[in-house]
Structures are given as C-alpha cells and as structure tokens.
Length: 224
Image 1 (cartoon, helix red, strand yellow):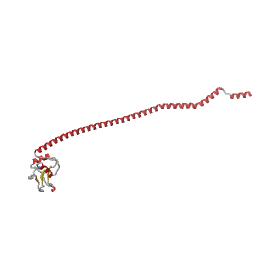
Image 2: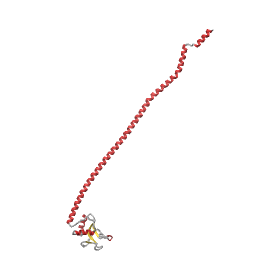
Image 3: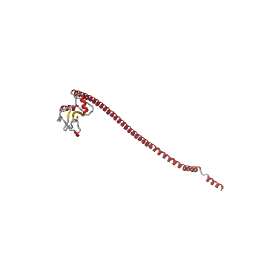
Image 4: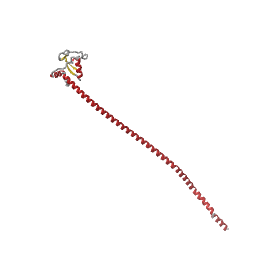
C-alpha cells in the first residue's frame, strides 16, 4: 500500500516531459502574443509613415517651388517696372535738354536778328537826322518846356517848326517818335493860337476839334 501511494504521489508530481513542454509553449505563446501584436502594429504604422513621408516631402517641395517661382516673377516685374521708369525718365531728360537747346538756339537767333534790326534802325535814324539837318530840322532828345525848347532853337539861329501844309506834317509825324514841341501857342493872347512867325493857323489838316485849348490850360502845342 505504501508503494501504491508513493507511486501515485510520484505520478502526480512528475508529469510527462511532453506535457510540461506543451504547457511551457502555451505560456510562452501567451506571453509573446502581445509583443507580436505590438510589433505588427508598429510595423504597420512605420509603413504608413514611410508611405506618407514621400508624399509630404513632394508637397512641401512643390509649395517651395511655387513660392520661388512667384517670388522670381514679382522681382522680375519690379525690376522691369523700375527699368521702364528709368528709361522714361532718361527719355524725358533727353527731350528736356533738346528743348532747352532749341530754345537757346532760337533765342540766340532772335537776339542776333534783333541786333541786326536795331543796327539797321539806328543807321536809318542817323540818315534821317542827317537829311533833316540838311533841310534845316534839328531834333533834340532833351526834355524841356516849350519856352526852353524855343530858346534852344533860337540859340541855334532858328525857331520852333511852323507847319504850313499837310506834306510837312506827315513828314514830321513819320520822323518823330514821341511828343515834340512845335512853334504854335497862345502865350501872347489866351485862346488865340498863333505860330511863332505870326502866320495864320490853318486847321484843315488837323484832327477834328484840335487845337481846342482843353480845360483852358493848353497854351502850347505838341506834334504826336
């Protein structure tokens, strides 16, 4: 009996090696199953990441290229605009300088023409004065009163001019350029105009109403 119990006890404590190995395998499988699932999930995540990474890189590269192209276009437009502005300013400056040169040349030409005409006028005026002197006329540029002017003429052996006909009046009007005293006044008798040689006054070639002794204070006569 003791042997039987001992065998049973021995049998209970000592299971077959195959059963023990199976139990160990089951325990190992149970322990390693979560690790394998985790590794499988990690591999799937890594694969998805690897698949997405080139796509994201391509998108970023594309956006960078677009940004670079836009930047280059904007810079090119700005440079082109500045170049056009500079060219326009340069053309305006050239045109302005040409206009200034044209004005200066035109001014020089007009100045030369003015000097030529002034010289010609002076020559003609000198010739007229010479001819008038030969005809007995003397024209003075001095500003004097009627009495003072007459005295100058008398000192030269003459008198203020007496105009007896329309031809002489036209001649004197063409020569004289400013108001000039003539030998007509009412100094001796107020209201009665007489020439310095006491010849009568002929008003046929005078302006209508002249001489009129306006305001009662016109004593001497000028030719215009």
